[in-house]
Image (cartoon, rainbow, N blue to C red; front, side, top):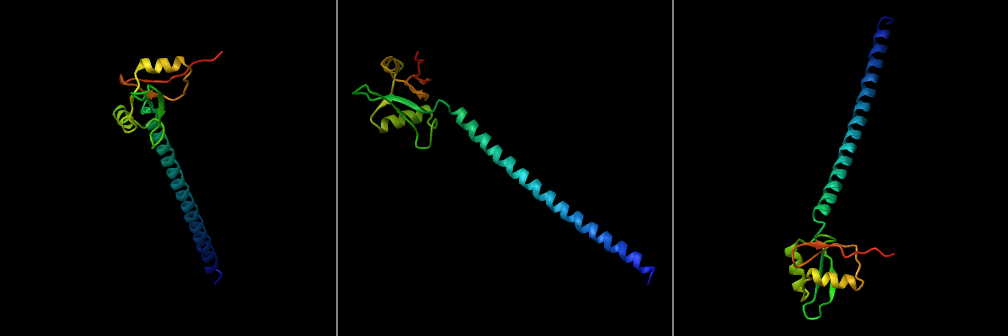
Length: 133
């Protein structure tokens, strides 16, 4: 039986090593899955930010045709979500039209200041901002 004991001890030690290595492998696989999940979250966040940047000029600034009052409208989906056609439609739903550059300039000279980009009737978008001294 003395000759069998060293063999049995080695077998038990080898099985313990296999169990420990399997456990470490599972832990590594779990960490890898977590890293992949985090990378996917970052990727989604970056895609969302890119979408916001590519639609940067999608909010609108418009004027009512009768009153000439300039006001700003934001999409229910968030800032910078309207394209030019959608901006025109949103204006029409409010009984308004997109403002002209001259209307925006006049409102800006009268003190309008907004750090929001808005569509104008010519298809361009502007930020009506000025620097106060």
